[in-house]
Image (cartoon, rainbow, N blue to C red):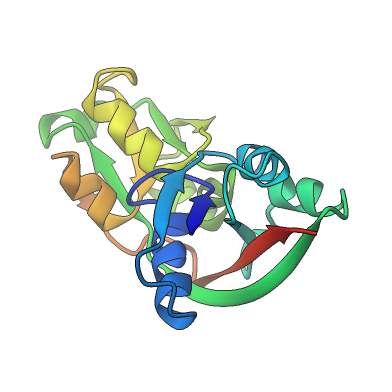
Length: 185
């Protein structure tokens, strides 16, 4: 069995995929990171994966537009759903770069969920939309993003990319996201 998910390793969708594997006893399932909901949809249609995992909605930021778009196609069946608490963290390249941050990069949903925090702590930073929270962390580590960029991602994504933890639990309030497990009809 192959499960494709929106995001990459250490994204919240990756964690949700692990939850589905555990809940549905899909032991031995292979996980494939597909970065976007659109890529998950294409892989399901092309029968490259058996199931797909996408974020559906968040209690702060609302519906995930890219997932809503693929679900409107009416080609997929929602097999199961799970709600998970999301604990966003802000990371920078290193301690010195924190005072020079010009941009904060993350998925649109994460930026919305942390709006108040960002306005209060980093009012002059430009917000940069990114396909995935964990991808932003990886790209900061690899120099694809400038050292004056901070990223919002999971604690695990930031730490595994050897980034500097600026702050934990930065969402404006308790953040919960509903993820769904899809299959092609």
